[in-house]
Length: 283
Length: 318
Image 1 (cartoon, chains in turn purple, blue):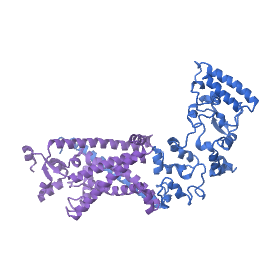
Image 2: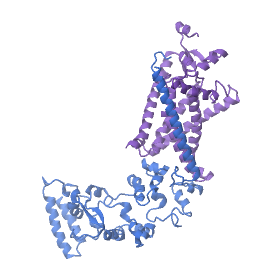
Image 3: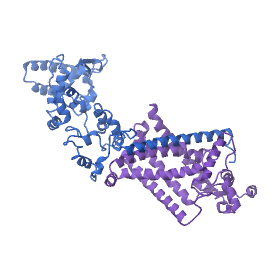
Image 4: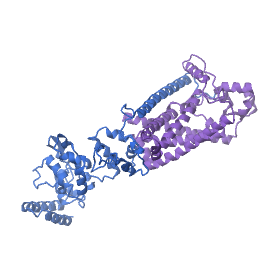
């Protein structure tokens, strides 16, 4: 491959993985998710000392509720944008819906997962992963489905009088169960069990993956991480579409700072969530 | 300070003019108080005597009682088979809404001889029957018509369990009922008899918001009523079929009939909950356990492989 030559000539190449639109959407999702968890989870763990501390720190239940609903509006906004993009992608035939480049789960994901477990136990090589791995697809679709459920149940409880005019009162009971459990599931998936680790904590990207913030990763990293996509693009001659010279140094520094700050905040958020959950169990 | 004590003592004397024996006792005790108040604070003796505390809001009658009853080591007496503490926290009393009232405003059966005890049941009957009523007649009349009031007069085996004023309001440390602290504790007061209901209430938005400091969110009494409380099955109840919509509309003016069918006292994970609620709760229980277990195992194995193969902190990426 031409990598070595590039390095010698002093041109750093990067792989553009995410467009500005997708990064913008991730910023919105991230901001609203942090805000919603921060102001929502204390309600679930109301007996916890940390819940009281946080709610008082935010200025009381009313203030926390106001922040929660503001963040909910931002959350709905990004969801509408993402869904709009999805419809546009399919309608305008921007690309294949199924197959190698797609976020839609396929047979390959099942094989990859089995392959990864074999690799974990030292019984085979790490599978050649495609543009989107099975855990990334899980993250994406879990968030997509979760947003519908948590957003829908949240809106029902935001406007209980209107809800009860259309549905029986027990719908509000269901909404509370859905909202509360879905929130707990999402918080656990994002902060502890899946997303933070699979995006930033795995050995390939530890301690933080800049790609969602800057949009690009160094080409060397890309080849290692997405060997199958790289091979396919090499074969199809579409590598030029995604490989570009690296942005100027100040821009790279800016994204490193953003990534660092977000990682720090993410670490604090995960610790705080664990404390919230563990505290009532030990005290 | 001494002058103030004399003035209050004179007023107090007026209250007791009906009995020459009381007047004699009062004259003696007034003298005692004046002497005590004028005397320098005791250098030794451990517990601070009442005259060391601000006298202004507390009458001398109170001060006289607290001479003994403010001592935490005063102990307990057994009344009707139950241990009753003789200790009254003077600070809590002065901070209570009744902090300005003398002890005998409520302890109406009190005789000058402190050792002539009134039995607990007798005192309680007096309290519910006259002491509170002297000032809170309206509330007492409502209470009399309520389930609690009816039960207390029923003479049945259950009547002893019926709450009197002090059971819900407390006694010496009595607080205004619209304070956040009181509202945050109401479900425990009700829960003493209606156990199990408080946990389900606390899991609703109302309960969560009150717990975390939202004063205006509904507590037990906002829906069920307070002094005139009746069982939900009673047509006069605030939660009867005829009245429930009006009760909800006190806070939710837009509420409709369907709104009133929201169920406060259910445990979603119990099979007794409505089927749809139970099934959704069970679905999430299984889903959360499955996702967290799989995600957790996947993560731990990934870390294990990463550490074993030295993939972490590899210089220059990969």
